[in-house]
Image (spheres, rainbow, N blue to C red):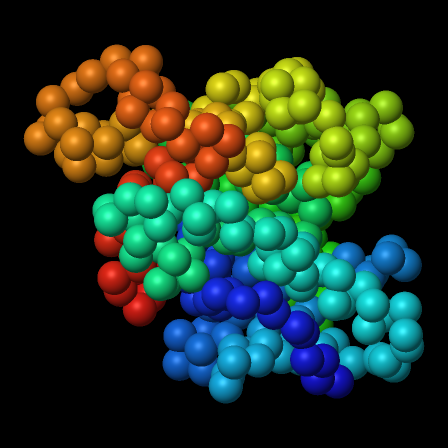
Length: 299
């Protein structure tokens, strides 16, 4: 089954796919030869669908890879999932209007940059973000690969889903430390998963929350293992760009781009981006990743 997904003006498929590192973490998979992105989305009935996205001739096609009937509910779920992952229903007109005011940032409008790829669920985004804390990207890849291969459900040959909160909640801390190699993160992942599985934490609502960003930031920070860096970047995946989400990599890039390698305080970086208001976190990220947009496949 092939489904045509409507896209908004200025949408750039590959600028979104390579907006940050998520496309390199399973179940996402980029086929550089076929120029496709594979993702796995929950089907709403306890299972998962494997989709391959093709971007050709100004249209986006989602191909269902694991068979089954094309019921109206299934088609709607696929369309909604792809739209959410690629941020197709989020308006970036105010962001582009702000970017046009500065010659330095007009490339973003021309490129159609700004949409940040996110996972089908907030749970997957949060777990992956915790797996980026205090470690190298190589270790993040190892942890996420282990989560998918050892705890995910089979979707089709060679493709497994991201584990559900219930599956992760059933693990022991010793298993997560030994098999997933997540170290000190193990108890944090267990507490998060068990609260969600037990119904005492409903983080999927965050994507549609109308609460002030400051309140949402407090809620995200209340998850053990989520500090200011992780919370700021989780908020970006919720469509809130008020926080920078600084880590050692982004600080280093700022020093290199704006200070000739000289270190400055975080407060100096905050002041630099304050003029962009609610978009400041996204402007910062565009500065950090501008060179990615100059390559076809940066990761």
